[in-house]
Amino acid sequence: MLLLGNGRVITRDPATPYLADGAVAMEGEVIREVGSTAALKAKYPKAQFVDAKGGVIMPGFINAHTHIYSGLARGLAIEGNNPTNFLEVLEGTWWNIDRHLTLDGTRACAAATILECIRDGVTTIFDHHASFGEIPGSLFAIEEVCEKMGIRACLCYEVSERDGAEKTRQSIEENAAFARHCKEKNSDMMKAMFGGHALFTISDKTFEEMVKANDGMTGFHIHVSEGMNDVIDSRENYGCRSVNRLYYNGILGPKTILGHCIHVSPAEMDLIRETDTMVVNNPESNMGNAVGCAPVLKMFEKGILIGLGTDAYTHDMLESLKAELTIQRHNACMPNAGWGEATGMLFQNNAKIGARYFEKPLGVLRPGAAADVIVMDYRDFTPFSHENIDGHMLFGMQGHDCTTTIINGRLLYRDRQFVDIDEAAVRAFCLEQSKKLWGELNHRAY
Image (cartoon, rainbow, N blue to C red; front, side):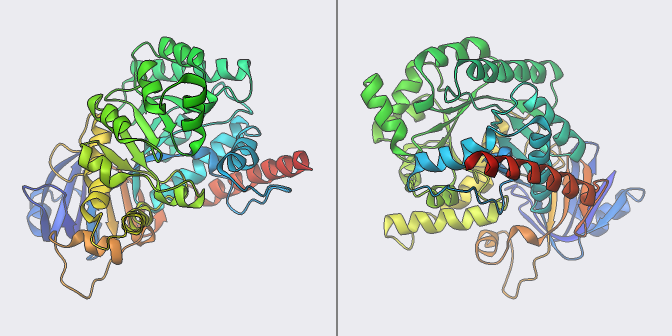
């Protein structure tokens, strides 16, 4: 048993929202009890005590949309790559990178991503992978790294016709094989979705093959109307809007995630709501790619379940939260807009998205919930409690404040040191693989 105590506890549980000097008792994979440090120490004297040292004890963060395959891209400059629009960003950068990822490159991307997630207090990820250089076995390779390093994950592979019929077939088969594997394994640490890139790289024939291969096993995870590419392709080649096309092809539903949804119409939002489909916004990525600002406030008005992701632009969910609030206010020209929506996306809706895939409750500290708990080293100089915690997080905290990360009851990061993870070895492996990838990219780019 683990007992994490001597901290200020933010539970996100309305029944007991805050303890000024609290502790969390964890037994196996779940939280057994939340209470005062003194009381729980007396009740569980044999528990391994982890001292929060006055920090903020809180639920781990959930990233509802990220990309492991970008893990080796930091600092990369590809010769001749100077994108001036979104399609050129995809073709010159991301599609170029994933076409050269081997299974070892994928493993390195996963290791780099997970290392930083744990360090930033992210305990669950919904990943959308692409490695067209070597597709078969790629999701299984990521699963191996996730299990070894200890993160909770929901994985899928990005189906796309951009590299021809054989790669399309392999990507469909990889999704189906991994979905069957996860269904049979039935682990609450690893789940599967059925991935698709975006509508403008997927024909109706391929959608039909995806739905058939999925056979109702899981939901879909696809980028939608991130740029105008989807909108124009759907209108010109299929005579409808993008979300309508997904509906006609049987993609929408309560277990499906639509990434981005920047250029969606009010009628499309109604269709998303009526099918109870989920949306995940990624503000920094959208700004970085200059594709626009998602109509998040309108989607909230419509009653859509919309969560927060990073698109791998960062692994710091608090950084993404700050960007979400500021871009929504900027776009609305209203300095009082978006507060409840932005914080609700991260702290309530991401947990609701998680609940559609994982059995144990996420994003909350209460008995029976997943033992996914972090400690933030935050020394405030203004009053602090559950009543203003979101203000402290928006304007005071950042991911690097995380000092301790526990996932599924496993202590992975303590006092800013990784536990049972050889950080030096992980970084050496990532560096080796990144040099191979970068050399291949720049050699091919000339």
